[in-house]
Each structure stands twice: as C-alpha cells, then as structure tokens.
Length: 257
Ligand SMILES: [Zn+2]
Image (tube, rainbow, N blue to C red; front, side, top):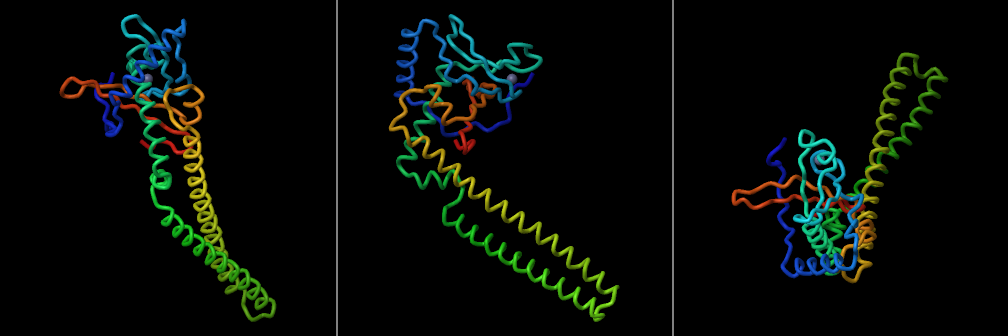
C-alpha cells in the first residue's frame, strides 16, 4: 500500500562489529539455554510506525525470530505493510542506543541533561527569572486594580463619580483584571512545565546511571528506560540496501536519538 516512507533516516545509530558479535553470542547462548526460544523482552514496547498497532513476534526456520505488524498479520496488506524486523537487528540497535546513552551520561552528565532539555541550565534560569519578574508585575498591577476598584466605589458613593463613568471604568478595569488573571495563569503553568521537564530529564539520567554497564537487554531494563519503540516499514535505498527507521521513545524524555 505504501512504498517509500518520507521520513528522514536517523543518522547516528551504528551497529559496530563488536556489538554485533556480542549480540550473536547472546542470541545463540539464549537459543541453546531456552527450549522455547521465546525472547519476549520487547513485549508491549513495539509499535507499528504506520498504523500504530503493536508488532507481534513470529519464528520461522529460515528467517528466525522476527517481528511484524499485527494489523498486517490479521488483515493483510490492504491494511498495513509487514514491517518485517528481525529480532537480532532490533536487539543490536536498542542495545547500541542504550550503551551509547549510558556512556554519554557517565562521561558528561551535565552535557546530556543540557541536550535533553535543549538549552543550558543557565539559559533556563534566566528564563525562569524573567517569568518571575513578569509574574510579579502582573500580580502588582492586579493589586493596584483592586485598590482602584475600591476607590472608584468610594467615589461613586460620595457622588464624585456619575453612573456612566462608573460603569465605563468598571468594564475597563474588569477587562484588565481578567487579562491579568489569564497572564498569571499562563506564566505559572509555563514555569511549572519547565520545572517538570527538568525533573523528568534528571529522573531518566538517574535511571540509566544505575547501571554500571549494559551488556544485555532484559525486559525489566527495557521497561525501566523505554516507553515504546516505533518501527517503520523498511525500504531499499539506491544500492538495494535495506534501510530501517526505528525510533526509541525513552521514558520521561521521549525521543532523544
Ligand atoms: Zn501496521
């Protein structure tokens, strides 16, 4: 139903020879040690990049274990494409990314936090200071308006202000009041959001830092660090080479590769 996805191919992820060999060893030893040969470590994490259904696993003699779109499996190619993804490739890719991030975090935690937050801590602090200033200004004006209202009411009672002017000023001040309330709400929400983002990034960095090394993938590890893995339909480039686009969405921080 669709040929070549329009998405950009992620530039970085490379499966090195060492990593590939490590994965082979891992996959083979697992095969030997487990009769059922059902490595379900990715269960619940895989999504089809085109239709959003889950990917299910299958195992054939010639192809080995692989994943495919469950909508395609159930309803055929009028509904989605196969999204054929060998277990070994997925395993190597995800392991490579986690190893990359663990190494990066260990090397320079601040830089990674900065990258995750797309802006330096300093910049965020100055933004926060600006927001606080804006907030104070709005709150001060809000107080002034309350005083003006009281004064206006007084003047009206004393007969210093006629009905027409009183109504006109009332409307004017009330409108400004509402705008200020809106402004205060927006600034407060923005400040909270920034704080949450910072907390989330720190949480993820802490999670991955717990590991001294990541040599193999397990379900608990994957579920702790990853929210979902979106697999797009592969395609062939000009040289006939299969190109895969696999997106990892990490917990708390989303897509960061
Ligand atoms: Zn699909």
